[in-house]
Amino acid sequence: MTKNSIHLYYKNVTSDVIGPEHGISKSQFEQLAQTTAPRIVELNRQRNAGQTPYRDLPYNETYPQQVKTMAQFIRQDCENFVVLGIGGSALGNIALQTALNPYMYNLDDKQRNGPRLFVFDNVDPHQFGSFLEWVGDKLDKTIFNVISKSGRTAETAAQMLVIFELIEKKLGPDGLKKQVIATADAKSGTLRKIADAAGLRTLEVPDGVGGRFSVLSPVGLLSAAVCGIDIDALLAGARAMDKRCSNEAFFENPAALNAAINWHYYTRGKHISVMMPYSYSLKDLSDWYRQLWAESLGKRFDLDGKEVCVGPTPVKALGTTDQHSQVQLYREGPNDKLFTFLQVAHFSRDVTIGPAPKTAPELDYLSAQPMSRLLNAEKTATEYALLHDKRPCLTVLFDALDASTVGQFIYLFEVTTSLAGLLFHINAYDQPAVELGKDATFALMDKPGTEALAEKIRPVATMDKAFLV
Ligand code: PA5
Image 1 (cartoon, rainbow, N blue to C red):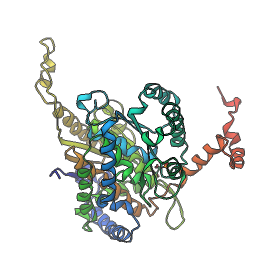
Image 2 (cartoon, helix red, strand yellow; image 1 turned 30 degrees about the vertical axis):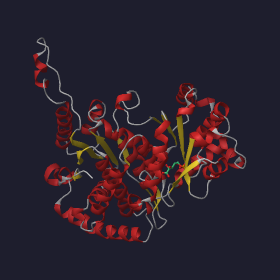
Image 3 (tube, protein in one colour; image 1 turned 60 degrees about the vertical axis):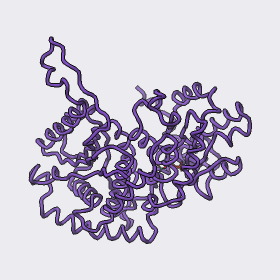
Image 4 (cartoon, rainbow, N blue to C red; image 1 turned 90 degrees about the vertical axis):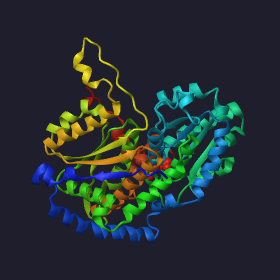
């Protein structure tokens, strides 16, 4: 494992930096420590009682072995690897690929250490239709990984049915066995049933691990391994972070500090949590975080059944891009946000800025400078500007971007979410509000047995022309 680490820098939420109204004072930190410490103990207890199985994924030896064996086989003869999944069955895959493979991975054969990767997490006919047109004559060199714990998710099921028909038509009934891998519940569910009946190769979605906590399982590991990402280093990074996040000393535990600071600000009216990476590679990790945070913490009822309608709103932004889009609001709009920057100390590659033309000496200051210096200067500049307006800022600092530090980041935010769930006193592992939308989709698509719901939806499903301007 590399020696690279990630670190949580929290000075810029203190009252010493942004004043007593918006900053956290020493005594408030002491109070947070007292409130959070028993939650760390409780989370460790839950983990030891087997109630948070995601915590043990980095230690599982079977999954990486199965994944590596399958990846080795796939890489022999596969030019395109396609993930069909949504939510927790897609966001981790996308995040790992963006974080750890080059920007031009799919386009430049020289920069690619594996097949091209496509992840479809939508049912947009324009997007999918264009892909089908492209892949139609490459099916024998394309492997599809259908990922769904339930198999009943309409988006993934629809994509799968399109692909099944195409493969059977072009490659015959045995085509499915060669070209499709299902990642499904080990025993039950629609996808498991289909996969077993069709004789597909399968991997399992671990029992008791929700989609958004499953990236370190076969759900996220297969596409990563197929595309040349070092999954051993990823898991080793997660294990290293596990030690830090199990520490019952509040001020030494980055997940505890992160959860407590987020919770503190939420309870004081800062309901928006902005994650802003200053690294294009990290941009999809903030998408992954957005689902983790929103689905886990946005809850109507607390653990005592009391209606609380609680939950911070996660927002993703990208530095420097969104400096030219969002920062005006972030500085002068309502002071209702906590900012979390992601910063990379050492980039594995750099670009030197060229000389300025004689006609523009005002650009001389950029010449011969590494682009990484400009990017990190802009991060500090934005942070300085936000602090000037008393906006609280956290930074997750990556020594460098590699599989280990990405594994650390994933685990840090998973445990942060669990601890925040305990502080908010809600169940961080269910998502009851997602179900009604899923069922309503079934009703609108005329699934048998959903007629009563279809009737209830009718007033919404038919547009009232009186309001259509
Ligand atoms: O985090 C979750 O549990 C969800 O986002 C699911 O991953 C998503 O709804 C897809 O579900 P499934 O894997 O059953 O198709």
